[in-house]
Length: 383
Image 1: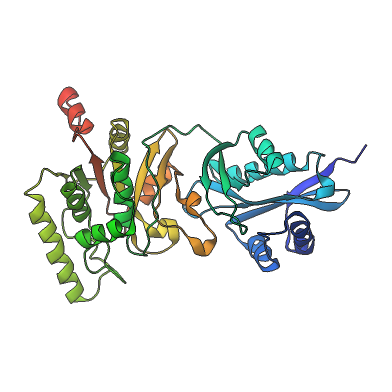
Image 2: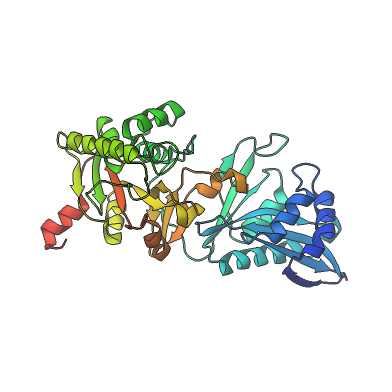
């Protein structure tokens, strides 16, 4: 009888040669390089776990932890050929799930080749569920199946929001708005031309740095022109995003643009609430089938002091789920890392406060214009 696994433990830098040997024995393409393995071993945003059998490394699991999200990703998973069939993979996968959970992540995601039946069977046995497909994912142009396991609580169905990645650094607002509109009307084109047109309609021309960002009223107006009902919640009705703009000329231009947006609002049916959206109201809008587009702090997500727009795809008692239009490719992220990100509700409430003034802004899109917040207030006397 073959000896059982001696231990599963965190990988160390001195394991690098053995890890590389396992990598080369297990994969003929899509191999991690020595430099990549070394980087992951040293990264605070990754956990590498090794399994030992007969005193040697028999396999490893590499879990990455996307910044600002509450899911982990099984970035790489390998068991040496001569160690298969002894429970090494199952033990490693359990350790990977535990590492993600201990890092505060509520879900673990992965990609797997459709023809890798053994791996798919292992993942299914641990509760992973297929939730999509990625075309031309591997170096040989093979597709990948996406799988996910919720580690703490089941995800609610939520609205069916398709995913669209922003194509420029400054088009998060239009990309988030496109996703919200497409959730309500499948005829909405998820295309770069539509993204850029929305940006032209809603941009403030300038921002704290670089190209102009998008104003909540500008985004609401753009949606209204396309037949969607919009309600805007904003915690400050004064001029927005000016606290970090030093040049007087930029500040003046941004003021003029914002005041023109507000002038245009008076000719529409857009409802403006001069306060922040409450979490109970967010839940009510989601239950009614509306799709919220919300401002978050780029510093809490990407450590950059910039405003950033996301779309909320669902919520439960523990998490709010987001489509983030930005894919942090420099960190090796893919679209899957930005889809349905589970964010702890307490962390979400910190994320939706931007800048020193803790600005909060949300655009609620719907087709029928029903406002469950107003209906509840009228029916029960609550605000």
